[in-house]
Image (cartoon, rainbow, N blue to C red; front, side, top):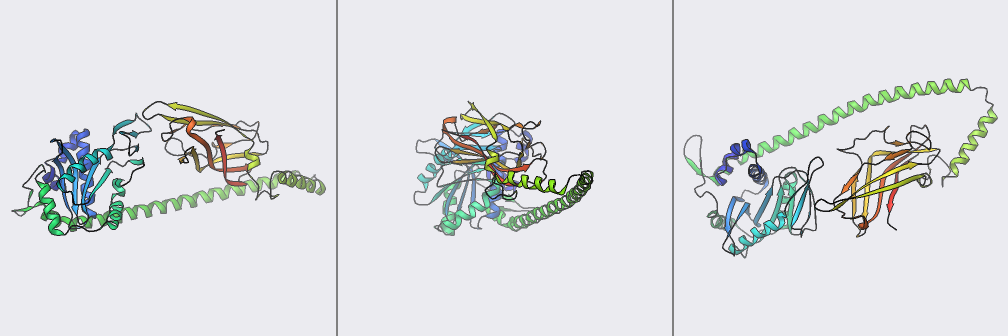
Length: 431
């Protein structure tokens, strides 16, 4: 496939990989998209790359990749970017966000590709033309308000193209596909597109592509099998780890049970009547805070009301301007503790109705069951500060309606098992 790419573009990928500058990364991204499309598209599809097509102003515009098939002409703008991509379809500038280094800004690729499409439309005004923007560098895409444009990373491209093809009509037969291909080929960097064979002789590039198609299909099936085997091994390994953890947990419970039994024997002087009164008092205390009157059905809201929240907003003046949020939590309850879980999420509700979710734990902050439990009043862990979260989707504090954390667990003092799960703490509510 690298040989085919070189014939299409006059670009030697091995040379570009040794240099590995921005231009080299761009070429490599184009190659990855071409290879992925060739695997999944129909046998009638034809490809051209790095076309220099004249525009209405007399200038020329370079197009990364063009594919022609039964549905029409697909024009691809390819970016070899990583990180998280933020932007709106109408913005001139988008942002490439990184957690560990400075952000990067770049031109809106939708608008770039629209310029390319207008050049193609001048040549083929009666043929459907589709715009596609592909991020080939494992990017996390968070782009808003786009329609009639396919935006994808490399790993979702196959599914998105299949879905788009299923929704489109077939408007070109084999002869028309060939005619469009020949008309566009004059703008390609190389016109003679002949591939030398190992046993001598040459064949046109498209014939060569179909000679290796079966090899590519076999390669794809082998990739799927390898991924399936890897996933099965991971599941098996996790099962063994859980089994080991269960044995440790059961051992700890057994030891605690023995300790509790010894403690009960040491307090045998306490009368049955005193024990019964203590039990009744405990049930009354719980029922005062519970709509159901039992530990298992405890209403969490009364306990969550004992969490004092000090919200902290900051403004980040990088491009685009956004807010950062954190909060200090203080537990003034004398009976109950709260704990964040692996499923805990920040929920930001904007005044325009948008809901934005962020995981509390992840790459920057790992989950720790002991460290993330907020103790009762007077304990050393009754105060905690949440990790600062940057919210690029919201520009200023005034745009925020509400902030909360979901999936909170509530524990009775010195208890191992939660008495309430999936609770929510309201961190901020705009008045």
